Image (cartoon, rainbow, N blue to C red; front, side, top):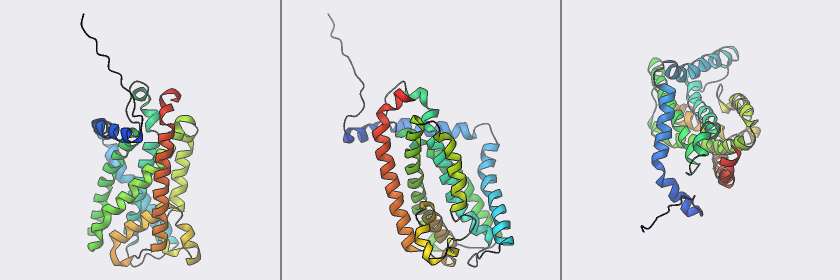
Length: 275
């Protein structure tokens, strides 16, 4: 009589085992990320064009409204460059948060069939936004050549601020993706958050126009720190960085990320049953 070996696949029972599982399933992360990129860009032109047209058209509108009509100050920088330097992180955040927020619902068939650390799903969805960011960044280079505007050594700090934007996006993505599984109404709230956030963030104007007594309070919006950081890195000495507000935004970003990660892990075991 032959011995029968039974293999039981179980999720990690401890936090340590969970992170080990996360590393072991890294190929699934690559697969989901690559699949999303292919779906977005393969055999289509509008996917690539939209990642350029959307920030470009928004830049034109904001330049006309805030730069030409309202005549807001631009710190000696061409207004289109001032706006586009802010559109880069904002567009990344908006896309990454939206994609990650709906990622669990979009992968419901996979989640209900096999075990894997669910954290992989919203995290992998951010990769598409990184590709969009790379494409949009090329337009920033063209604008700089057009206006003969050269960045300085601060440009090398841009990856740090991009990491800042990724952490913000993942933090909100963890919260909203987990909430979206239990409360489907959140899928209607997400577009409103993106639209509202565009106008309360310093995208079409410089945050330096905010009165000094309100500027720290204004920095409670984590994207204020991200956008100001991008402008500080890209526009060089023309734009300063309000360090108290930047530090506050950074602290809040870490808080949102850690709390989102905690809530996601807390509710993760129920996803397959609820979804």
